[in-house]
Amino acid sequence: MDNSIIGIFFALGISFFILYSRKAKWIKPKIVWLFCSGFLAIGLFGFLFSKLELRNDRLMYFGFCVPIIYWTFDRLFKRLSEKIHDRDFILFLRNSNEIDYGFSAENPHVKTSDKLFSLVLLIIIIGTLFIGMNTI
Image (cartoon, rainbow, N blue to C red; front, side):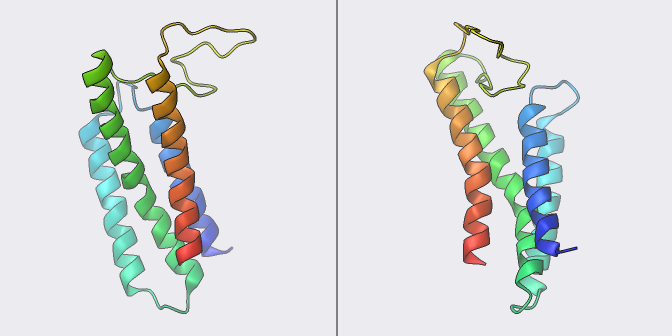
């Protein structure tokens, strides 16, 4: 199996797992910071000590660095939302347990900033991965 696919699945899988379960009681921000920092250390170590010719390995290690980038922006958006609305932002994505996404559903509690933060987080997750794929 190609090592770059492992990095892509890891980057997307961990980031989306954290995104959709970020308000769960069992996910504590300190634990997520610890895990993301550990993944970053593994990614940087592998990235710095892999051979330049092995592009697939370098991409795999870059995938370990993506979750901390996502998590940093998630915390930034949480702080901004707390300043604007005095609450954490509402994840406005399909299959999120924070909104009603049924047919002709209305979500009057969702503000424009919630939609913007959700969209930007998706762009960060996917965009960071594509930037890494193009530059490595």
